[in-house]
Image (cartoon, rainbow, N blue to C red; front, top):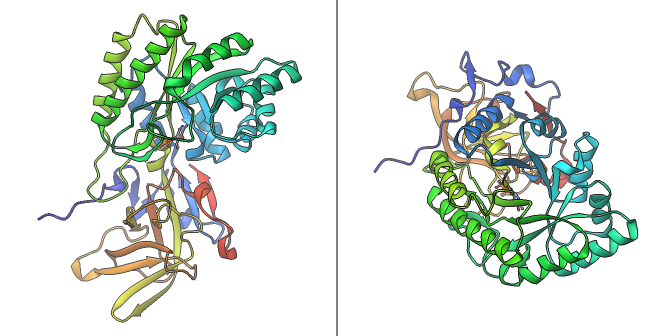
Length: 411
Ligand SMILES: Cc1ncc(COP(=O)(O)O)c(C=O)c1O
C-alpha cells in the first residue's frame, strides 16, 4: 500500500539554491531578530482570492473572519480585497477599527458579548450578530440608552450539521445563535424594536474538505433563510451563509473541490433568485484565505540521540504554533507539512534521516514533527512548518514558560 502523501507546500512558494524563498527572500535573509518567526505570503492569499472570485457567483460577498489571523498588517492589506470583515470580540473589533476600517464593513459574532463590547459595536455602526434573546434585550436597552440605532442580524443554530467538519458549530444543542425553530418571534421582535435589521447568519462548521458536505449544508441553509424570509414577510437585507471551507493539513488530505462548491452556489443563487433579489449573500471565510499562506520558521539549537532516536531541538514550538504541535483540539496528533528550510532536498538517500523535531518547552507535548524523514539537519538550520497562517500565532500560549515571542512578517 502507498503511504498517504502530504500536500507539497513548495507548490505555493519558490526555492533558491535548495532553500525556501518567500517573495524571493530566504529564511536566512528574513531572520533579523534571532527568534522564531511567521511569514505570511500576500501572493498566496491573492491566489486564493482569485480562485474564490473565479468560482463563486459574482454577486456573493466575501468576508474575512479576522479570528483566523488577526495580524494588523495582514488585516489592513486584506480588507480592501474583501467585502467585509467578521470579528469575534471587542478586542478584534477595536483593532480593526484602529486600522481605519469603517464599522459598516464589520460584523461581530460570538456568545456572551459584554456590555462594553456591545457598546463599542453600537457606537461604531458594526453589525451585531445576536446570539440569544437576552443579548437582544441588552442591545435594545443599550441602543435606547445611547440614543443610537444598533445594526443587528440574528445568528441561527439550524437543526442540521455541516457533516465531516473539523469543528461542528451548528445542529443539536449549541451555545451559538438561537435555535432556528425559535427564530421567527425573535426576528419579529427585532423588527418591532426599531433596531436596524441586517438579516441572519448561519455558521454551521469549520475546516471542511468535502464539497458534498458543504453543498448539502448550503442547500439546507438557503432553504432555511428563504423560509424565514417568507414567514417574516420581508426580504433579508443580508444573509450570511457561513462557509467552513477547509485546507489540507495532513498526509492523505485533499484540497477542497472549490469548483464543485461554486457550481452548487450558482445553482442555489438561481433557484432562490426571487426570494433573495434584495439580499446580500455573504460567505464568511477565515482559514481558507490565509492558512496555506503562512510558514512558521524556527532554528535548530541542538541535536541529540536518545536510545536510537534522533531529536532536533528547535527554538520554536507549541508556544508559538499550538495547532501544528497537535494540541489545538486534535484527537490524534499528526504532522503538519515540515521541511528543513535551507536544505529542501537531499542529494541522495544517504543524506536523509528520520528525526523527531521538538521545541524548547519542557513538556512532551512540544512536538513539531514526529518520526519524519528529512535531509540531515544540523544546529543552525531552519525548520519550516507550513499551513500555519490560520489559528497559528494568535491561537498559541505565547507566555507559557516565558520563551521569547515570535515575530510576524507579511511579505
Ligand atoms: C462565526 C464564525 N465565522 C467564521 C469562522 C472561521 O472559520 P474558518 O477559519 O474555518 O473559515 C468561525 C470559526 O470558528 C466562526 O465561528
